[in-house]
Image (cartoon, rainbow, N blue to C red; front, side, top):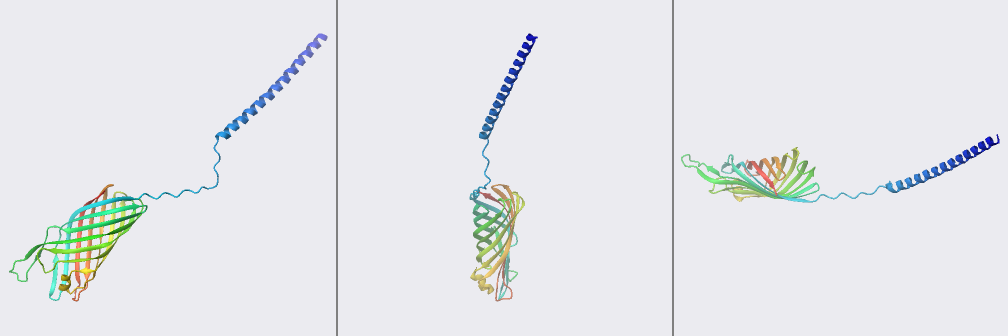
Length: 295
């Protein structure tokens, strides 16, 4: 029994020592886990970016669009008509060319910056191979036939506001310049050679029908005539001043960024007061089909 009790005491002592060793080992494991957790948090905090400040940062203003300059050259052909009526003290004089061939050229230098476009434009239109026939008062006499030319010229500035991307949105502008229209003949006719000229204003509205493909331009126009040739003033007892009004309509098809095809119609009526019952009248019409190249 003494031996049994000694064995039991020894066994209980071993169990107590094992329990104490296990408890110490568990405490060491817990310390190791806490140390690893602290190390992981430190690494994570070092790798994470610093939180952004909630204070708003003033953004820099957007850079303005770079100015873009270009040249445009246009050529076209079609028909024109000129009707001139002068009432004189000794009768009524009229010249009607009918529809005759015509040609036109235009040149434009422009610069676009932001939502604005500024241009200087020159435009010339003239009849080709036209003839005038004057019938004498005596039927037996042969009529007088002579080559004539009806033509017009204009030059001026074109400021334009762009409401959208180029060739994709509406644009509203104005042509402010000087215009001249004239009649020339080789032989002297009852309706004399003459010129009319003066400052002019044309409001130009560009409307996209199909963005970057098809556009419609509408441009009403008015002009103050400040000079009329003396031959017309003498024949019709006409004032030196007058007014002209009319406009242009143009349909443009943008074939490529540097080429478009356009169909244009232009009509303008010039009037000048006279001491006779009817005023001096000058009507011009142009119907032209052409191309424009952008350089």
